[in-house]
Length: 406
Image (cartoon, rainbow, N blue to C red; front, side, top):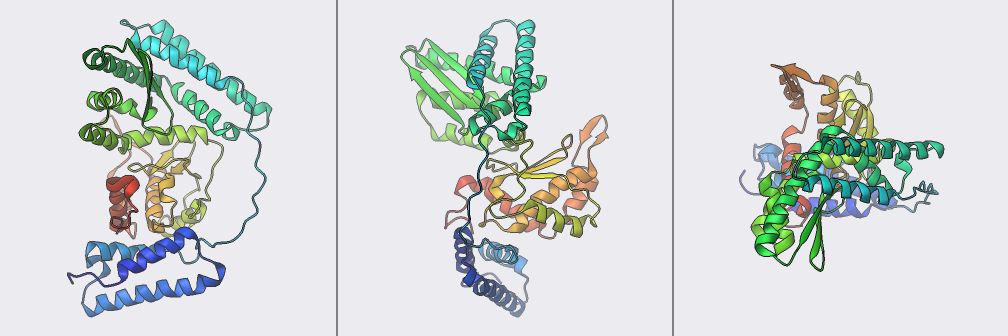
């Protein structure tokens, strides 16, 4: 069968829209019947043509598996909900001032022509002390850093991240490299600029550029600490001279890489370390775990801490932290437009990291062992879920454009 099944893409798009907006209680039965009838019709046509749904053309195949992946027992029901009272955020005095002081020390160290190990150690001690102070304040309020306001929580997570010496070294190297690139670009193309300050921090966007007179500040996301000089040069040049399609593509490609997403997921795990949120807008990780544990682990796997992240990512969709026995799944997947089996696939992969652990092979730490790969392929919708993740990575935020997602 080489042609698409007429109406299947439209049926999937209609279902997508209904799931996204929520289904009124009185329409649930009709919606379930509509999905069941669509699936039955597709499978009947496939049987008549002596093909399987896996052999359908790309758009029809994706539409079929989207419909197949809808959890009819856990539909997003449209109903009025009474908002529960929210807990007031813990007040923190001058945490932004502390962050500003740390950024200034980092800028000074980055611009220094010679290494200053004593100042580096002093900065590391300052970070450790600042993190301890925040945690003590939270303890006094019988709370955790997860109860901080959004801005304070982000600063705490950033300081906690940098209190790891290896991350602080990497952060400093990136700040220094970016500063050197900025000086070279401004000297060649922006001679009226006397100084370009560089800040690397935890923020929502990729970068921000502010100019006042003959001075400027370029603030870039912490996710760029793994970026090479080519990416950093593109970033600095775009900021100082204006955007160029080729440079912007290079920046965005790195920002959708696993290396970039890994940093953001780890920062997010600090910000919400004691605020596990397994119940998402569409999918409940507790329910998904129970289903996967029964089907693939014979109900033998001890449940780890499960949480949706506070951010969307487009290459790295899950993260298992062995020391905390905690799985964080990207909120990108907590969306009614994405089939449940895609979220299950990513969760299953992180649970396999917990199940198999890491092994030393020829002195190197390996997590994707032969056993891991074997069990990964046991997932029922392995190929279909992989295609969805590839599509998410390829189209990024534009994935659900009506002309592109199917």
